[in-house]
Image (cartoon, rainbow, N blue to C red; front, side, top):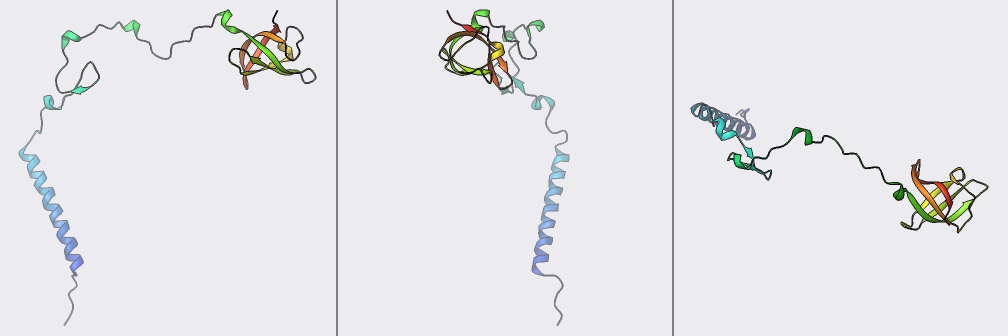
Length: 150
């Protein structure tokens, strides 16, 4: 007797395909019966004054007037620091005259700031109290206009 070419696994796969096709057809018929679906009013969502999404329209009495010129687009510019803020006090912790650079420890922030000999207004030595200004350099902050604090 010859064996059947259709195995149990093939029958199971075919049954699953048929079931899926029937479910898809049933959904299609249901959509046709409910033609139009939901109305536009059902799909609209509103945002209240707190930024929450709601289904009710906002209260017109809570509407605020906004002047278009008051809206800032972009980042606001930082105010220029006053000359008093630029002047800092510190102590020379290291100075190498042969190489032409040194470091100043800021008394306020305790950070070490690089200083080049061309930024010195008068000769300084280690442990001198100095007055200086700070400007950004290629590797961090640099001291400029350095002179001895009197």
